Length: 274
Length: 342
Image (cartoon, rainbow over all chains, first blue to last red; front, top):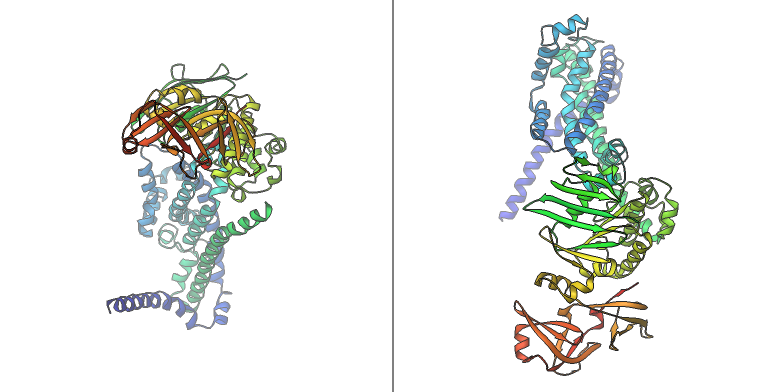
């Protein structure tokens, strides 16, 4: 009896959770026919926002990979005093409201901010430019990447690194031939999640970069701007996000499954080899 | 020919590993229980852990000196390190694993009989094959010293005997100083020229396998070396068993395959003592007077002719064993290990 009750209660809880999570997503597609949604994507606001989003996210993501990968490798490989504190600091933006990130960026790089005078002297003005969008996106997505990348590098067996060193490999070769190829699965997953987070960045961007169509208005900002202008455009962009998000998740799962699954055909080949 | 000199102190969890070793063109086995600091000695020689005191030199070149502040990085030390479980790079083929250490892998792969596996990935290999790849890779480094950490531990018992013989032959042929770490005395006796017993970071005894068996300095070494080591001449019988004529005329039968000069190893606890040759399943029986009875905890070590047997205190009392009395020591062919000599 109590077993039955337990089963029923978990089933009901799961049902509520699924409906709650899926109903709004389904509603995006149910309110407007798919063909109309596609038609909305010809809209100027959408096209400008798409270009801004693609450009800023790609630049920001590239910067995050270039600086984040060595940072993660260092933190994963070296044991030093304050390492735990550094990792916690890197993770801090994860738990901050994005609006706080925007204020923090303004306080650092804004005209009246910490580096405002120095940047002004160099003739650089960051606030409300595409550079500001890039900074906001990079700031918000980098903890996602670095965290995942640290885990990916920590998963590389230290004995393999040690073996590589005894075989005469210096730090560049150890990194390029052993650590990087062995961590590449985890790095790819972290990279995809960070990219998705960067594409969806809203709060920090609107505070630090504003929402200027064709300059700083990214796709999430365009959704907000179109909300009281043309709701169908907002719906269409949202639908696009749902599809892109789903595609990223599915490709991650398929990738992990393919890597994992590749072991068994190898085993089979080995037995026929001998 | 090569010479390795080590005199170091390395702190590990709970105690210091304090060891002085010298090996010329020969294989030195470091034998001891797990956690005694054996691997630490190898890692210090490879430059993977830093000793707090001492010197490491190879062929007269200092690799480490705590006073002279010499400390070569691992990639600067010409070591052929074969770590436990071999640490083969899983994403590289056999050929690329070996080539990682430099040079063309072809010759080494052929020499170790794994040329046919060049394109295979480590996950596709058996334990014995992996060990050979690890050896080939270590040799590709053109090492001045070989460091082998439990090279036989990952092998099943069947391959183990064959691999011991191969490894011994290879090490002889290379003529390099080699340090072999193992917890198995039989491995050490089969492969190494000399043995040092390491307990809690200290070497408690060193010598040849025969020395350690004949005159263990402590009950620990006695237990570790434990085994009886006889030498003799082996030949295969038609029934598939191996017959060894031991120096002195005694004939012993083993399930291990061997031909020519061999060492015969039998653990004392594999030997049963009785008053007469009863119809037991043991193939080997030695009838001789008891030379000595030595208490060892709740057991008795009984010396019968060339053999040492270990029986419980209770059995010794029940059989009323006394020195000088003639008894029969019996052991099974399956408990008789053969290790080729020369």
